Length: 159
Image (spheres, rainbow, N blue to C red):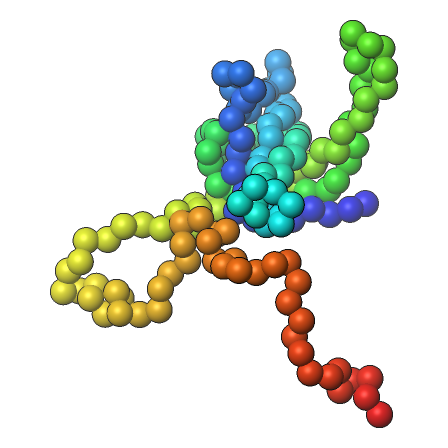
């Protein structure tokens, strides 16, 4: 079994105006997609989106209902990687896709954006402190090329 931990991911919008979360008729399972922007030198602007399908059953599904997740929600998840398989109705070919079977879900505390504050006497010290993370985490990469040598020798293997 492969465990999956995904932090600060976004619940993706439904395709072509469909709801982001698709609950079963009985309401005991739910299916949705998550997305995460990642660094990739081959992509435009050195970033691209990774999108994954997620399924939840039973008590985890109940938790998602109580959380009232919707598209654009930032979440952290823990689950196991599995493979869905089905037969395409038009071509009758067997298709497969990776899916995360959800074990735990929680709201992400960062929400992917920084809050704007009005300058006041109380928070002037906070403004002089170190800058906080940018609203787009990809801005922090700067000129990073994907590989940076750390330099020096490796004393562990030196004799």
